Amino acid sequence: MAEKGSESEWVVMATGRSPTNIAVIKYWGKRDEDLILPINDSISLTLDPLHLSATTTAAVSPTFSRDRMWLNGKEIPLSGERYQKCLREIRKRANEVSDEKKRIKIKKEDWDRLHVHISSYNNFPTAAGLASSAAGFACLVFTLAKLMNVKEDLGQISSIARQGSGSACRSLFGGFVKWTMGNNADGSDSLAIQLADEEHWTDLVVIIAVVSSKQKETSSTSGMRETVQTSALIKHRAETVVPARVLKMEEAIANRDFASFAKLACADSNQFHAVCLDTSPPIFYMNDTSHRIINLVEKWNHSEGTPQVAYTFDAGPNAVLISPNRKTAALLMQRLLYQFPPNQESDLTSFVVGDKSILQDAG
Ligand code: DP6
Image (tube, rainbow, N blue to C red; front, side):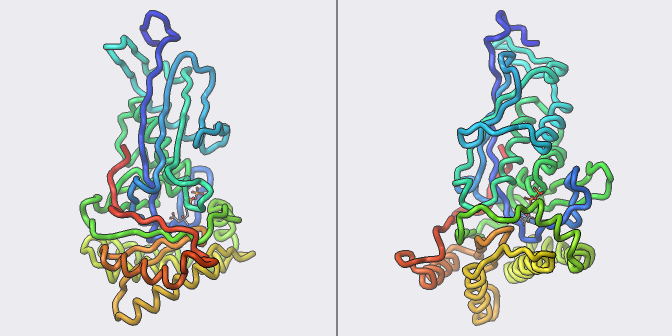
């Protein structure tokens, strides 16, 4: 235990920040619900932390009598299995921490009985209908690993974040990230790999058109469970379509080939929503406004003969729009504002514009 005069005097803290990520080849369906092992690889880009990120501080002190967590200032229970797994897995890998100046030394074995307090903030409204679990779990695991001096690399840490929420594993890296589904039954090789760093394709601009700020009716977790149980299309998607698409997407990213990137991203978003429709009962994540946005982009892309903008929708109606540069992003905003005028009964509530869309590793 800490070798400080009075044991109760010290607190050791660590802080981390993780942005959210947007999948351009979607993860939808698990082969193992407990370990959160997916049925296909997925690819995402990590967003600018300025707009959509979680910042977490974790503290340890001998005065803490139990693990506790606050989210946006409100205490939340840590009893859920996903939180418990993340805490357990990080504790298992904890190492000695010492601060000679403050005369604090936490031995490896001390971590089993010491408790942590965790405080996490999202820099966007949790109720805005924008995924927060990816950034949240990535940040939680990253910060705990920092606090407990875990030596594993980011890939291994991502495999722990995956057990909090599948898509969280991809938020451990900046730039373009692939979550490889892995083969091992214990999930040890189901982790995130950085395909290209944040400097690779800096021209891209991401705009999120907030269509609804309501909480989604069907969570991703239960939605994908129902799809795996009832959809005939999902098997074809996971076994045939996605493996080929992942290879093409990796190539498009490596070559900064926006036309291919956009075609693949739009097709994959549409297929993901198609398997949701193929679920029994069908799951509708997009609404009429989402469909109008798709039409707007499709017509524009078609009229130019080559993709100007890519769209992708997660488990909700909000549109994530990716343009190849600022000029096209400005044109896109013009078109969106024309179709959805702000001062009228607009269906679009707000926009989140990622200026520098791609960013750094968690840190
Ligand atoms: C549509 O990662 O939220 O955003 O693993 O059950 O926590 P759990 O699901 P989650 O699902 C994300 C689904 C998605 C697609 C994606 O991000 O790849």
